[in-house]
Image 1 (tube, rainbow, N blue to C red):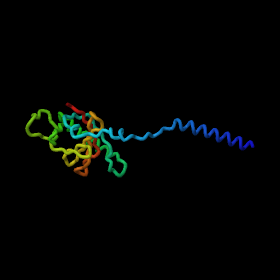
Image 2 (cartoon, one colour; image 1 turned 90 degrees about the vertical axis):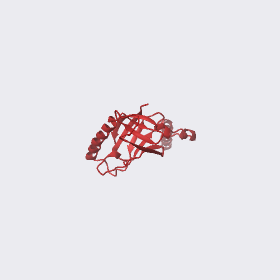
Image 3 (cartoon, rainbow, N blue to C red; image 1 turned 45 degrees about the vertical axis):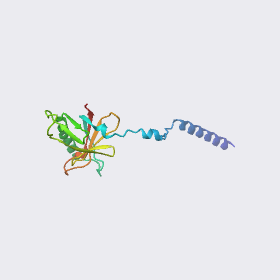
Image 4 (cartoon, one colour; image 1 turned 180 degrees about the horizontal axis):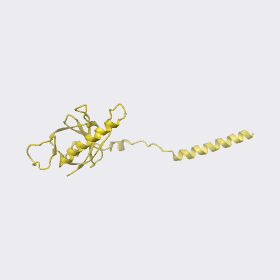
Length: 171
């Protein structure tokens, strides 16, 4: 009889602990269809305008099969500094509605030939600059900054796919 009372007491205590724990356990709330549809997806118009460089960083490419090695990170950091200096020497990046982009250099005339320009396309909610490094531009929040990543390496020694740049709307 004592064992039954002891077992019932233990069972009751475990039940009380389980109920109390359930009250504090985090829950995963389902996302409604309406809420899921409010996710921000940029349009071409969101990219149109003048953008100023806001920052840069490195991160190992997604397709890197092994952990990053110190010499790879050092090389990427050095390359990032070079590319950041190039972008920093530009007054701004202009993306126009007619499908063109231009990294304006100080003193460039408003019209006439450009030094570093080309065309862009829009697909999969991203703007893509037509270059051999395949820069992809993304905006993750309405009115937010633009992020530039690279999706191709033109040379085995380049480190474009390690680079991430942030751009802020200048106009």
